[in-house]
Length: 193
Image 1 (cartoon, one colour):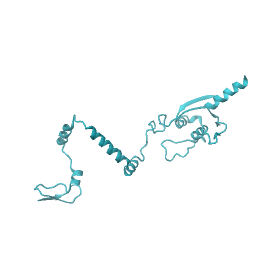
Image 2 (image 1 turned 120 degrees about the horizontal axis):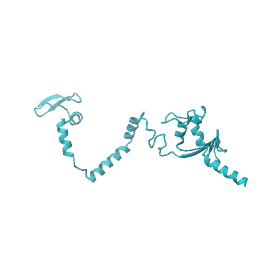
Image 3 (image 1 turned 90 degrees about the vertical axis):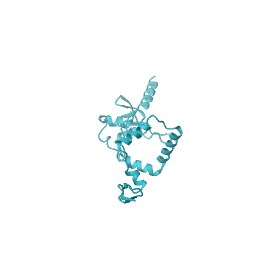
Image 4 (image 1 turned 60 degrees about the vertical axis):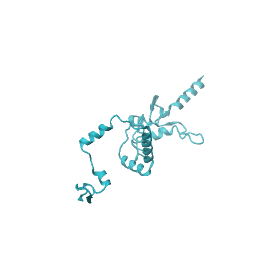
């Protein structure tokens, strides 16, 4: 019987063979044991060209699905992602590629502005707004700042449950909804005829 100290946990390790043991248990061995470079090369060479069976792929995908649905897994992943910024131009980012970005049409001083993503338009065209309109609005947990101008321009499109618009005149600080402007121009033309 040979005795030694475990390389992982430091406990006394006993081996029935005459070889001095490096680990006290299978768990410690799985943690601390590493193959030499030659052995790794042989293992990878033996796996090259082999494909997994379809049943193995399905079992693996099912196991991944189950593990990702567990509460502990979600908590660990959200903790790991905290503080990591999303790419602004990603599908969840604050840009025109966002899956929820909408097309907008506004008019100010006779100039038409058609664009996708209201937040990005306001961020990129700050020269069109006053300092008061560019005050930040509830941005503590957001990727990109939301300005008061963004909120107010969005409110021009909101209609209450009773059918009345949130902003009755459809205008705010000289900004008008493009569709409403087109309707007004059409009505003016009909009145003149």
